[in-house]
Length: 119
Image 1 (cartoon, rainbow, N blue to C red):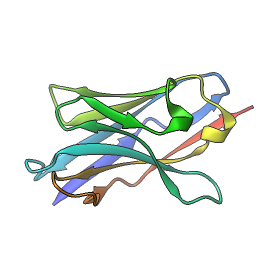
Image 2: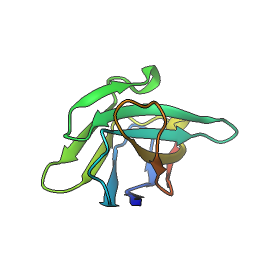
Image 3: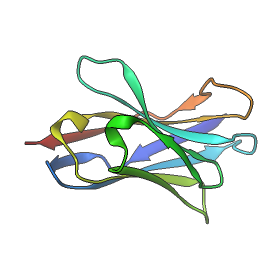
Image 4: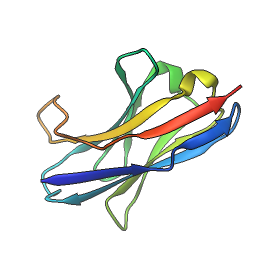
């Protein structure tokens, strides 16, 4: 079993920044990638960005390119989503997830953290 805990969400004004954290614990030795997703009000959950287990960013969704970046604290199993130039349309519940190599299915999900961007 793996546990993922997100933190760092909150209320921010448009143009502001936030950093979300995703801490993994448990049997984490066989996983390959960490993904960030969000679910905006009235919308389906969507992919935001991803990073390898070792900390190399891999890809990001077009709406956040150039504004959101991923990183990892290499001293522990904690990954970050750095969000800059936030817009009201970035308001969502943000989730992190992990998956093992050779699969497109995300195996474990965190509980989510709310990000609200005011105009």
